[in-house]
Amino acid sequence: MQYWLMKSEPDEVSIDDVMAAPARTVPWFGVRNYQARNFMRDGMRVGDGVLFYHSSCPQPGVAGLAEVASAAYPDASQYQAGGKYFDPKATPEQPRWVSVDVRGRRKTRLLPLAEMRQVAALEDMLLLKKGSRLSITPVTRAQWDAIVALLQA
Image 1 (cartoon, rainbow, N blue to C red):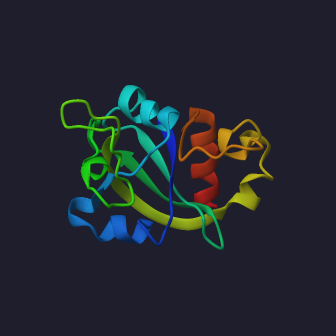
Image 2 (image 1 turned 90 degrees about the vertical axis):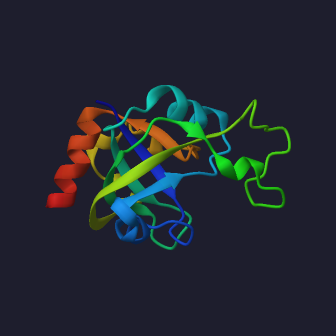
Image 3 (image 1 turned 60 degrees about the vertical axis):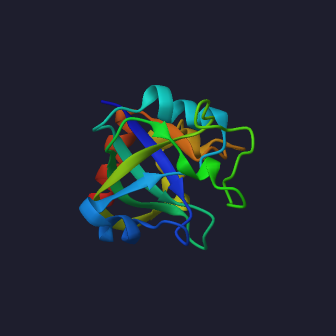
């Protein structure tokens, strides 16, 4: 089992949206960074743990726990002409971007980025590295355990 941090802007898809969705499952679409795409396509497996992170908002932080609920599949938003995530170079025969489904396990208290920065066990977390802007990053088991412990405190 692997662990991931996945960022979402809460005005696009929040942890509340996930928990209210049928089967608490939503497609993770619109990723347009090759490294993040490769994590979804090549690294993620059904059942992997997900830290659901609210970003680009007044108080960014981990807002819930989730899991990967599907293997990677072509992201339909890449074909929607005029859409926010349209990619004119993508075709159904040669998709460039993928989605995975994410299932919410539980909403948690918000664990703010500032609080995470104060935890020694998280000092090597990619999210906390200067200049890190990826929307999807791997998380070690130790980092996962530290965050889960903080969420239960």
